[in-house]
Length: 355
Image (cartoon, rainbow, N blue to C red; front, side):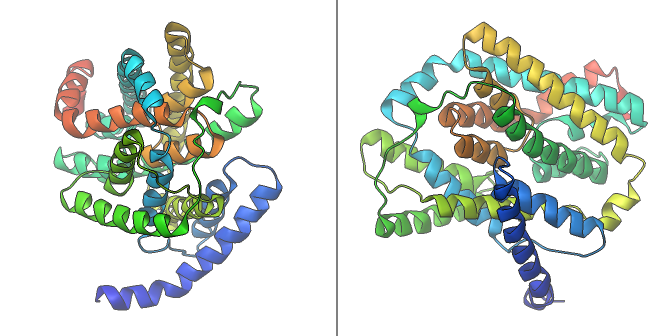
């Protein structure tokens, strides 16, 4: 079956997912849920899929969302903000170490409780992207499916719990210093988004993870720091980006996929909750140690994907550049130092990673 014929067969399910996702977004918005245009579609599409109604995300939807998000986030990187990021490098390094320690503890507990080999639980618990970790798991001979299940569950839990906790948990949200004031110019924005998409495509072809998100951030930040005037990204467009992310996250929940590993799911779910709670504890310690806002550190150490945590910070207006810097450092360590981290994990597990 060719790719075009496969797409034609999926089109009704894609349009149905869009219709359901948009309705769910308005419903969650009416319920005053945080990030309704991401959480609503994710919950709705996942529910339909698990009930046996197969829905699919929009082709290139995640990439479109990443380019929009990267363009919006790049506007935060003023010279003052960049200087503040440099001053917080020790905190960024400490948070990166803390995130991996928490992931290591999660891997150890998941291996001992579920009976799945330590090698697979290591890649299931390390806070990288689901696709990136699945690829690395296959490379190192781990079981790919449990890794994908665990990451899907963890990211979904983080996307739901963290925004709700920050919004209604009484945390002070210190965001005013990071909110850019840039005029909206649709002609400039159209050109920049098209250029950002090209940058993202080139980055992906060079096998750079999250290229559609990071390339617009890096290039846009460089232009912002240099004083070049870009366009603001309108609210409706960031809602569209949230919608695309929500559909992608919800579409990961395939009924047969989860039914096959139903005995592993409860352990993966508990492990995800453990990692979230442990990350929150690490955030509290780091916030105290480096005198940073607790809400910022909770987002910075949350074990979610780079794109999901970036859009959460952007939607809630919580120290966006700092959160991006924290998660970017984690992504770099995951993609460039996994073999060394895995060697350390093997020593920690006492050889269980080869089980």
